[in-house]
Image (cartoon, rainbow, N blue to C red):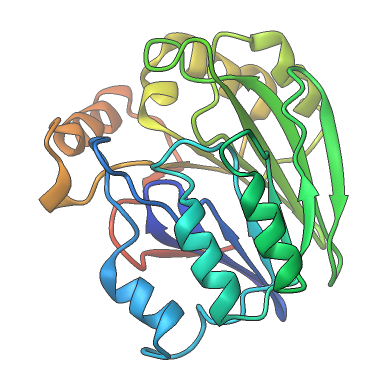
Length: 252
């Protein structure tokens, strides 16, 4: 069984058999026009509320360190109150203390290399492998920054999470052309771009395309939600869905 549930933005809770992954799922959007990790989710993580599925997640994985994807303070708190096997992220000068906290809580740290154009492989437990490919961030937001996309492989399933990766470096997506992708998760700007849809059709060819990184209704100060639904209607592509509601899930 492989199931994926939305937390907020690109934050996802992933269940692979009896192993669990939280991808970009501890974040505080701050001044960014997106949603922070919801309070009811944080209560379930830290106060034993809810059904417990968000407690003791095996692997915490992050694509990059922007606030709407990554909160050092929330990660520290999660490791303190839960049993975590591994933390996979790209340390920078502002997050060195996070590595120390992880070690104090007996959490292994794997440093996700931010080497543009390079693929790095990480073998997790339960037959799970993730691979990172570093590329430019979406260009007109943070043109100098980098972001890792994540390929998750479990049993016969291949899921690609593009997070905030750019559509400008088409040649990098050739690295995925021989992999049968079941699902690709991408943000609205990637899907809206002619170059992004070209990459989908030329190299990725997923069975299902999922648009995520959309603010919840109460947080949508930039009117992204109507833009996304108008865009989906405009392009009239098959097998496209929108992940925009807390706890919305997909079984693969």
